[in-house]
Image (cartoon, rainbow, N blue to C red; front, side, top):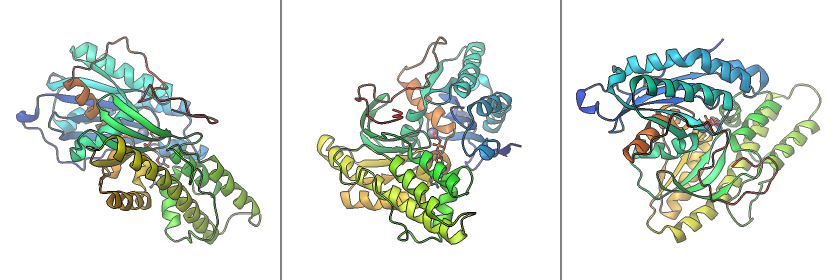
Length: 372
Ligand code: KG4
Ligand code: ZN
């Protein structure tokens, strides 16, 4: 069964003054099917997200085949719901944006083909949006952040520190050499029997845990540069679990281990961030803001740590609201709008890109399973 969450937390704005430059956005790159409408002033006219979490829960992670079929079954009605919520019809929209990558190819194909069909039938521009650019530019919609800014993108598929120099212009300072931060949250949650998605479950369990009980490694801490690595931490948690008495873990052990793991991961991220802040200060003296985005940015302990770090460094800390940090289509519509304003539209021959780095000039990070 699917959990339907049509979110309408935002005031619907349907006045004619906002009807210029309205963009419909679609997101289908992972396990959320989403459609949203955003106008040129940054107002969110509709924002619908259909989570597939319950469908993937039995497997402890996203199953690509299930995800693709689910997007196919639900995207049409989600688009209709988003258009109806916004109170507009296709004549009112200036463009249609869809995630063109990176992500799971089956889902991306569904979103891209739907957007292309809408663009072709209504004779409007098509915009292929890089999912990571969606996360990266959200803070400009929510907080009007000016370029350049330092970005920590932490999600289920990515963990990167980047300087956002402009639309389509990124300088990657560091990336993960193995797992993404959210991926590790999910895997550790599975080891602790906390279910999927793991991030929120670990954060909740950690609230009643003792973060000092287990001495887990802080990967990369003290090393130069801004790259991340989390597989050693994941292995250390597994070994700790294996040393526990056989059978189901008791609640106290689960919460202490969740808290110790969360603290270790955050300290590792914070160490990398310190290096990025130093680089940003030197190379971009006019930059004033730091932005955290992606699903893991929902973690309140991580947010508080990074906020404190920024305050010490004199940078403005910006974290979009949680429902705009996790996967959504508002960020795709907004990135589409930013691109449309610059005339950066895409032909209907655009091919979905399962791998699509934001900074094509970044040298390859050396590690097992490097993603970006
Ligand atoms: O950005 P997102 O929605 O999808 C991807 O593009 O990957 O991120 C999903 C990830 C999942 O791994 C999930 O466990 C993690 O974000 N996450 C969290 C929290 N909420 C979601 N991780 C840590 N703490 C949270 N509160
Ligand atoms: Zn994402």
